[in-house]
Image (cartoon, rainbow, N blue to C red):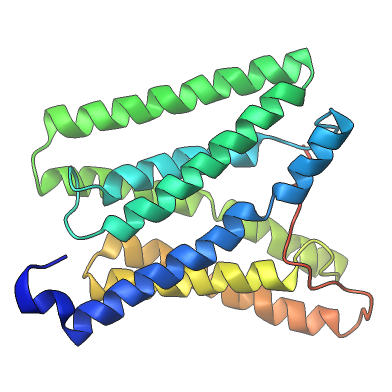
Length: 237
């Protein structure tokens, strides 16, 4: 945050407010798999659930966390906070998955987890050893954008599933709403901070969020049994 009077300027208050709003909406997304993991612990089995979404999300959170830290970017601490919280949640989910998976699944998840930490260590080492600011921010920024965009496969899968089945059973309203609000908040945060590495991927996320909400209202009217439950179980492998 800027020093002196600028730190309390309306511009700064609005930009930080957008970042805080994004953090709050992201928290809803981070806690959404809790019912799934309660079921895993209760049944002492991962059943047919896939741990890959949590591995991918952990790597994404770690890279974006590194991007938001002062070593790489200045005045983007709210990017670091949201992704540090997200990384802790995803790590907890992965460890629970490892604890209750069968031997083959456990070995696979441990290998992937070690791979995530290795990739993150390489990213940190390369960015510190090979790049000086502002090139360091560019290097990590491009990696974070690539990581975020690669995660859009999940919303695209959901959108395709809704259109194909004409059902919103696997796209709860409040989860879609939280995704949209988080994306629009961080899009605004990135725009106000003049940071394209934050605004562009979240702008794409906001567009996908709008599409999900439109599809929800279109198809939910045909099914009175549809739930607006905020929690979503992961896709099975």
